[in-house]
Amino acid sequence: MDRRHFLMSSAAAFGAASSVFGSPNDTVRVGVIGVGGHDWTSIGKGKAKSGRGESHLQGFSRLENVEVAAVCDVDQSHLDYGVGLIEKLKGKKPKAYADFRKLLEDKDIDAISIATPNHWHTPMTIMACQAGKDVYVEKPCSHNMFEARQIVAAARKYDKMVQQGSQIRSSKAVQEAVQQMRDGLIGDVYLSRGLCFKWRDTIGRTPVGPVPAGVDYDLWTGPAPKHEFSLNRFHYNWHWFWDYGNGDLGNQGIHEMDVARWGLGVKYPTKVSAIGGHFMFDDDQETPNTLNCAFEFNENGKHKMLEFEVRHWMSNGEATVRPPVRNPNAAGGPPRRPPAAAAPPADDSAAEGAAGARPRGPNSDAIGNLFYGSKGYLAVDSYNSYKSWLGREQAPGPEKREGGDHFLNFIEAVRSRKREGLNAEIDEGATSTMLVHLANISYRVGRTLHFDSKTMTVTGDAEANKLFTKVYRKPFVVPEKV
Image (cartoon, helix red, strand yellow):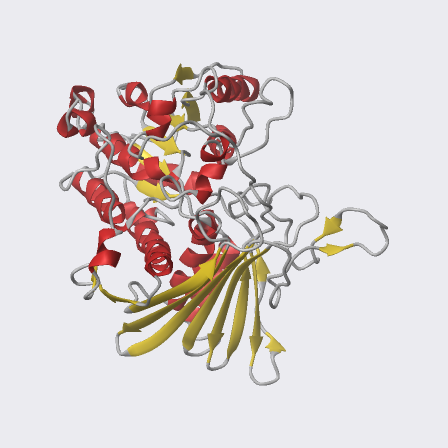
C-alpha cells in the first residue's frame, strides 16, 4: 500500500458522502475503536480496569436513539470484553473488528469514536473523515504540531463533525465560569494557571518478550517506529514514551491546558518555556513526570500569561483545587473530597456526565485551574465545579457545580450538522493541543521558543521545528494534503 491507498482506500472514497439525519428519532450508529484501559492478563478473571474506551462504550450506550453498532480493538481480549459489555448493556451483540480499516468500510456506521494511543488519533480521524464518518476523538487530538493542522484540514475538507474528548467543555459549571470571566466578574483576566498533580508511581522496567496471543502488534504500532514488544510500551504505559504519547501534560494535562486557554481567552502564544525532568524513579519512562511551563500571549493589544504545572507524586493543592481529605471520623477509612467538590474521576479524564464519577482510593491528585484578574480570582475544579473570590477582601463570589454530557453534545451536532454546536470542536481542541506540543518541545530542546503563529514555526530554531513532525512508518503516513 502506498500513502494514498492507505489514507484514501476505495471504500473510503465511495463512503465519503455525508450522513444526514432526518429527525432526532433516527438512530445514530457508532463504531468505537479502542476498548483500552484493561490489563490483558486479567481479562476473563473479573479484574479488568475501567478506561477511556470503556467510557466511550458506556457513554454512547446510554444515549437515546444511539447504537454502539461496532467495537474495534487490535487486542482480541479487549475486543471480546467490549463486545460482551455492549451485549450486557443493550442485549444486542455489536459487530467486532480487529482492523479499524475494515470498520471504516462498514457503510452502516455513521460515526467513529476513537480511544486509541495518541499516535493513532490523527491518522484514524483523517481516514474516518475520508470515509464519510463523523468523529469523536480522544484528547490530545494529535501527536505533534503537524498533525494538529492536518486533523482540522480533514474535518473542513470533508465537512465532518469532529469533536475532541475534552469533556469538561460540556460542564455547565465550567461554561458558566468562563462566561462570568467574559462578563468581567474578576476584571481583566491576565493570568491562568493549570494544575495536573497526579499520584504516579514508577512503571519499573519490563524486558522485551513475545507479543501476547491475540494482539496485532504491527497495527498497534502503526505510524510509530517498530520496537520489540515490551509491556511498558504497551497498554497504558505507552503514555510515557515519545513514540506514542505526550507525557502527563498530554494525558491528564490537556484537559486543564484547554480550560486554561479557554478561560484566558487566547489562542496562540508568542513565547513558550518549559523545564522539568523525570525525578525519583529509575525506570523505563522517557517523558518528564515533573514539568513547569510558561506561555506568553499578545492578542488584541493585551499581554497575558498561562502557567502550567505537572507533578507526579504526593502534593498539596491550591485554593479549592486540592487533594481528597480524610474523614476524621473514619480511622484509616477511605478519603473523601470536601463537600464543595464532586468525587474524582475513575480514570485519567475529567468527570463525565451530570452525575459526576465514581470515587476511588487514597491519592493526592489536585486537578484544575486558577484564574487571576484585576478584581479577584476564580478556581475551576476538574470535577465540574467553580468558585470565585472578589476584591481585596476575597469575598465569596458566584459558584456552581454541575456536569454535562460530552457524548450527547457530539451526537446532537451529528444530527443538526451544525459545527458551532460542538463544545470542543476540533479547531479548539487542536489549538489547545498545540500548547502541549510546544511545551514538550521546549522541554526537549532545553530552551525558550519564540512562536510565530502566522508561519506556524519557531523563529530561528531548526531543532525545535524538526520536532513539529516525525518520520512516519510506511504505509501509515499522514499526508501533506488531506
